[in-house]
Length: 84
Image (tube, rainbow, N blue to C red):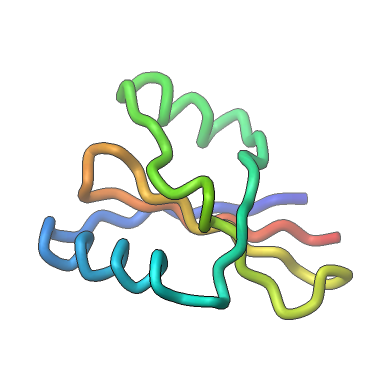
C-alpha cells in the first residue's frame, strides 16, 4: 500500500531542499514506485523526477519506506510512504 502527498514551495526553498538531499547520507538511490494518481499528475503536468539517484529514505527496510521526489517544475515535491 502506498500513500503520497504533493507539496509546493518557493524556488529558494526548493533549491535548499534539493541541496540538503544531494549532500545527505540518509538518502539512497530509489526507484519510481508506481501510483496511478501520482503518475497521472506527473504526466499531465509534463514533469520529470529530478532526484531519482537520491530519492529513498528508510531506517528499516522491513517497516515503512519513504520516497521524496523533487519534480522538474522546481517548486513541487512528492513524499510517498510505502508500507511493507
